[in-house]
Length: 100
Image 1 (cartoon, rainbow, N blue to C red):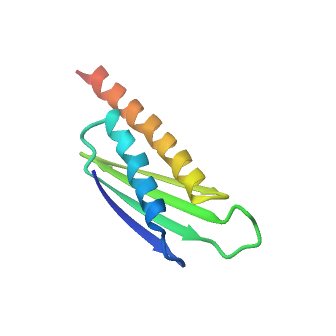
Image 2: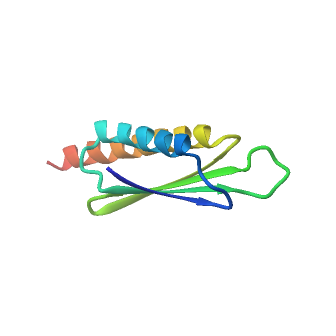
């Protein structure tokens, strides 16, 4: 799967980008027709510790899933967002099976 990652207000580390890629690749085990994913990593300027925002747009045929999570670390936010995407993809796949 093609992953486009953009970091806003900071420079993303290679380890973080590799983590994002590997975590998104796991979604393909549930649904193999994923076209691409757009990942936006943002740091919000607040005094709160939960200032890391991850937004993932998953492009699949005839649809797009968007998930936005805010956590203390990017890894935690990516993991949470990918879990949500996995649930959405499983649900969509079940609905497709019921139509057939």
